[in-house]
Image (cartoon, rainbow, N blue to C red):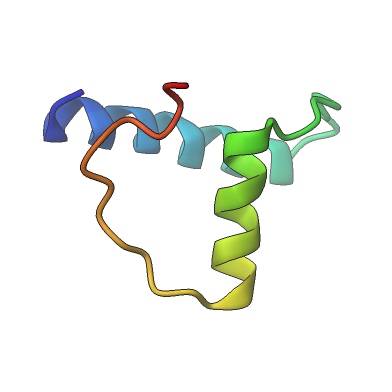
Length: 58
């Protein structure tokens, strides 16, 4: 993805979080392994490093 595409995906995620916080909606979806790694890093205060390759590729 290019920068513009990343920003659009981030915007979508932010809007989903805002909607979840202001409604009775709860998707109940568990975080996948990739998102859980991101959550853990953010909660730990880890410096966010630029990924140079897609981290979801195996």
